[in-house]
Amino acid sequence: MKIIAVGMNYALHKKELGHTEENREPVIFLKPDSAILKQGKPFFLPTFSKEVHYETELVVRICRLGKCIAPRFAHRYYDAVTVGIDFTARDLQRAFREQGHPWELSKSFDNSAAIGEFISLEKAGGDVQNIDFHLDVDGKQVQHGCTRDMLFKVDEIIAYVSQFMTLKIGDLLFTGTPVGVGPVSIGQHLEGYIAEEKLLDFYIR
Image (tube, rainbow, N blue to C red; front, side, top):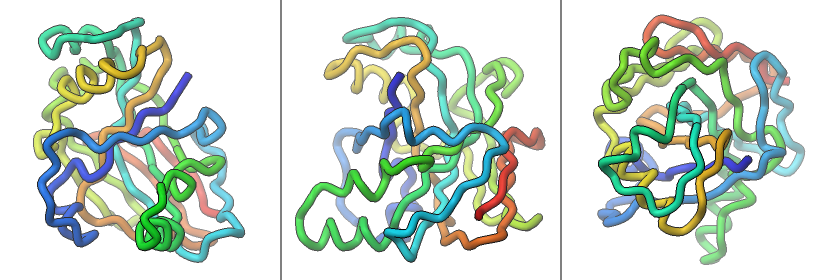
């Protein structure tokens, strides 16, 4: 399986990172399967970064094999959603960008893709473009988003990505983070929700 992720897919998040250009196509990057951090396991801060940020996202699970998928058929290729965290070594990302280098390593390190319990799309409300999700840190809400605010919709992303690579059963799509990203530190308790249902619960070590 592979993890496909979308960068800068919410306008206010782009603004908070200082990006003003308009993207005509989704910004896509990949994470390896070793990046998966399953429900309940602690996230250990890596030694190579002093500024790891949480980025809360809706995660969509691919359920069919597909290539060159038309946007109007893309809804047939996913069956479940959850909330996830795209951990980012922000200091490394900043340094790589300043040097004009790829910034994959700041996103793709081990355990950098935390995922919660998957629920059916029907249980999440039935409309993938109208799902509220949020993250609490130590009991306080720090980030909130709704998929209706995406710059590129889920079906558009699937159609776009499938031009370049075959989507396989079990692949995960991280759909982008809204405004409100921030650093994590040892001892913090992270809880991720779709609406009021808690699907992700773990600690920073």
